[in-house]
Length: 313
Image (cartoon, rainbow, N blue to C red; front, side, top):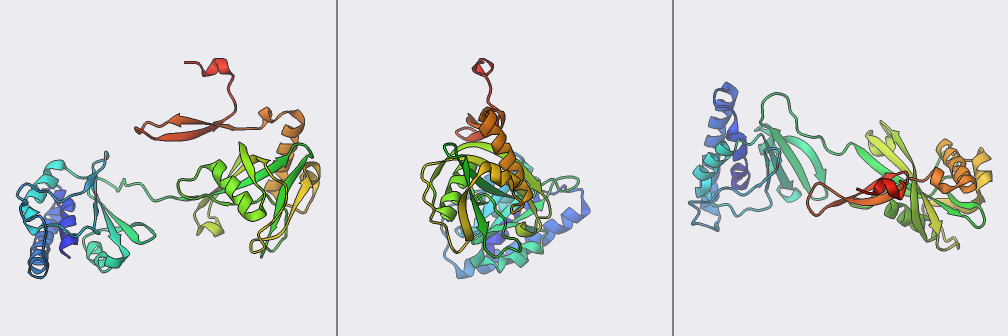
């Protein structure tokens, strides 16, 4: 309780001329005093010399503060300093990270205006907008990202395809799956192809992006589905029998014409056939790693290849 109460000080930054804000501050101060009294009588606290301490929290560039309730070592006598500092800082939002082991604190936070923002693994993140006007906090991720690999053997003109298990229609498609957090698109395609088929490959280019909303397989959220062109490094098939019903190398021209496939697979097969015959430079979106505006971070940019003369500063 004390950890949560001490973490709720950012919400006291409301405009003092606002009647609702004044009421909330008074309620929180009374609740905080009771919580600290109970906490101090039952716990041994660290950092008793805290006259200059402020409750720790990570401040973001948008004027919000994030506090983590997994850290319980907050001395109770930092109350006055913290309240003063939060008011001076003018925080517009507060974020609470609540471990599942302290789930009992969720209802307490909710009673003071916090709502769920998202949950991952063993913790939930709650948010409270304290700025003027409507809530301008960003929502959690609205899309999932699926990636498939079209492994084309240029020597034979064949492409690797699978039929998934437990489908109403056993259609040929490119092997693929969901991208992991922090995983590049090409790495997802290579990994998924190997896991499903046993074939090793390497990334060549991005071919297409499909966007779909209210996707049943994405819990009603939106879905981004990307298909990459891969080059095979091996050819022997050892497909995953738990996920796949069949796996074969099929001629690209045959895949482009057959009815035993999905509309998107048929379209990409035709795109690949065009690139195979006329040059992949006509269909490829190549990737280049570039420095992000955030210091020390990089991102991958996909686009049609630029002539060297246009890349010069």
